[in-house]
Length: 380
View 1 (tube, rainbow, N blue to C red):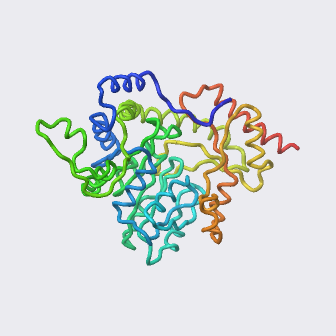
View 2: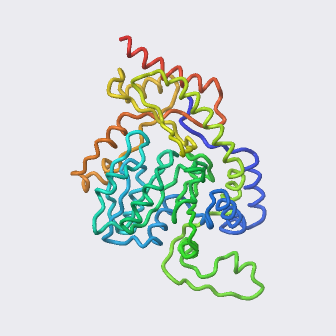
View 3: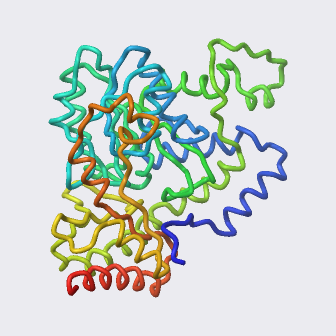
């Protein structure tokens, strides 16, 4: 069975984890600090805060941005449910806006329509690694005096207007889950250019502790910590950070290899007129965290039938990105919400296997299986 994805981890990462374990310092410590410095440098941000996963990153971003109970935050429904959940965590209300049918990223026109007196922020998702139009949303946020937060869970290594994702706005949140381009098993980051946000997020991720464990351990004097506000245990371990440092060193190469596979899919499928392929416009650079194909209305086979036939042939696929307002946790509250573009894209998109290293024979099998099942349907 060809999997939909798998992390690229080698003996280098295993050795780094092993070496860290032997130091005796395995929680948040010197490796985390090193990883943060290197991640900030890579993205071009002034600061980076390592946390336990992207969901906790989004939660902390909401807090430091001042989002609170009674506020509204505009975001796409077409995103993993953690996007909306992070808004709920602070007592605010997710307001779902439509996506652009070509990129699956938030539509700026519909977002502006949804702004009310209660709107506090816009949560912009770089869907499956494809950068959103950050400049357009920064202008919109400035116009209405809103906070702009980027959900860059899938976008490590992607770039917008020749600058890496992570450097463009005040709060950018990343995931290091195994389905992402680089992984630490689980983990996340928040990048920011604001020192006040940086200092508070470091405080919040460790129970609001005024002095972290590493500083106390390294001090030649006795230090007593204070807990200055109610915080959380959102720490990354040094074991994860050691793995992440090695992963970060390979990130640009990993993206390059992923793009080579995506280009093979592009070339193989470009002559099929009843599907739409990912569109990467000038100024946008995607890491191809996933490769999603949209089946147009005239496609002779349904998305679900195609997925089953590919599975029967030994090729894993996944449905298009979910729409949160139709998930059980949200559908009662959002029963009156209609997002036809998002719903259509979700229901008619198929995600194909893409990972490295991916054998050429497996890439060929994915291509041939996909095309064969569509062509058979055409001839029936």
